Image (cartoon, rainbow, N blue to C red; front, side):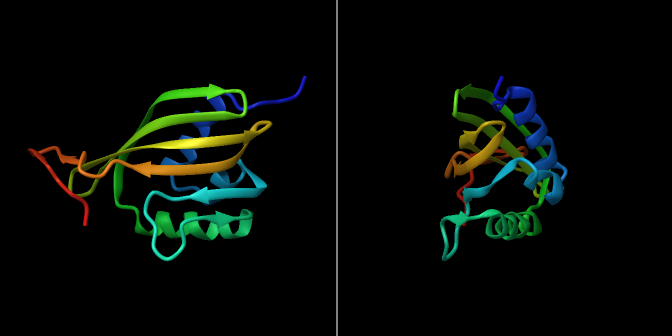
Length: 131
């Protein structure tokens, strides 16, 4: 029987990301993977394992998350998505979702979307816009 992505495996990917373990994170990707981060500068899409790894390393270096969680995990054959929420060191809650395309048990595409204007601080009920 051919392997495929499972909820348990995707949760292990989330754990590796939360722990900022680049080696473990990259073990989940195909060689020809594509990564589209939720925060972009001049480049919106990174292709190939080496380029994706550099982009993720850059995201991790900028990351000030103190807590993260994923929910609403859905896998439908070669496609999937989940919602995520990060709490930052300044207590902002940042929410978004990721769209995935899978190749067997590996991530071929990870496309992240951030909810702008829906981020809140734990000490404030007002919406906080990202800069």
